Structure formats: structure tokens, C-alpha cells
Length: 248
Image 1 (cartoon, rainbow, N blue to C red):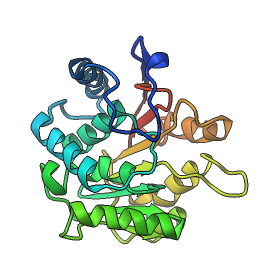
Image 2 (image 1 turned 30 degrees about the horizontal axis):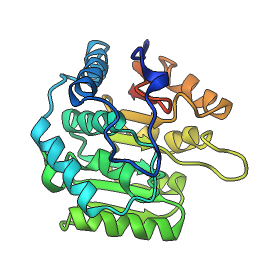
Image 3 (image 1 turned 90 degrees about the horizontal axis):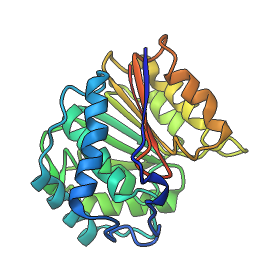
């Protein structure tokens, strides 16, 4: 089991306004270099097969989202958006489930590598899950503007139930949900356990808020850092939110 952490020197100072998701926070070359260092570590520990992705496709994806998505606010920073897009562009999951997608911005950061102007491969099932019906409807409207094919879609449902009932293999599972009844980010572990048996060897699990998810996230982090469950897990601290990237 390989467990590692990537933290740039300026993580604490890298802050965004959640209601201004498209504002440039640093020179583009710096953003590219920092994310590339994270990808290189993920490659070194065996999470990713390589670190290459198409910068022109990423920029096309970003422009389309900025022009077509309604985003009231998001905690996904530009660095994190780039990292999520790159991981999906490199891993190319045929089936991806994103749990807790709010308005769809976090979902499309993953799915945008397979649909719309940022697409670099063709996927089978890209499913976003949002438990609040009004937000799921907004997310679906946003996604339809970018993907008329229907390969990417949003459902209003409980993520644990959706993952448990999903009839296909899960090649990438993205976790950003909040549980009710005080569960908070602790629901990540329940969602993962519901789908773990459907994840072939080499599948990826991405957990947002690895830095600020609180004590309720501890059992999840202990689970993915246990060699009985994952062969490598890296805490990528590009910003104050963080992303735990694990490979089964």
C-alpha cells in the first residue's frame, strides 16, 4: 500500500470566492505546473498510467462551461477543476458516478473529458447524483446544454441507493455528498461500500474535501488507506478543500 500527500507551498494562500468560480487566481503557467506535479506523483505511485492531457481540449471545456452553465457558487477551484478533468481524461472511465453534484459543476469537471467540446474519449454511463430535486433539475439542464447525447445525466436520488443498484461496473467514483442526520462527509464510506464490489481492479475513487471534511471523514480515509481495500491513495492538497485520490 502506498499512501502519500502532495501539497504546494502556497496552498494556504490559494483562495477563491465561491460565487466567482471563473476568476483567475494565479498565472496560468503556475496552475499548470502545480497540477502537473500532482499528476506526476499520482503516476509515480501507480494511480495513473501517465500524466498527459490535451490543454486545448481543457480550455474548450472551460469556455463552454463558463458560457452555458448556471453556477450559483462552487468550492471547486480552477486547480481542482483542472485536476479532475485531467484525471478523467487520462483514466478514461467507461462508467463514472459522481455523488453530490449540486448544480452540476463538480460533475462536469469529471464528465467533461468525455462529453462536449472537451471530450477526448467516448464513455458509456456518466451519472451524477444529487439528492435535492431542484438542484438535480438545474444540474440536468446545465449538462444537457453541453451534452445533447444523453451519455451524461443527472438523477435526483440518494447516492447510496443509486450506487448499490447500479447494474454496471464502476470505473470511477467521485464523492462530494453530504449526509443527513449529522453524517456529513461520513457518508462517503457508505457510498463507497455500496459500490466497492462493482469496482474492478484499477478503478479510481476521488473524494473531495479531504482537507476540510472534518472528523467524520476519518473512517473513510482509513478505509482507502488500508491495503486491504486500495493499493495506493494520495491526498492532493491543491487548495484548502483537498482531494483524496485512491486506486483499487
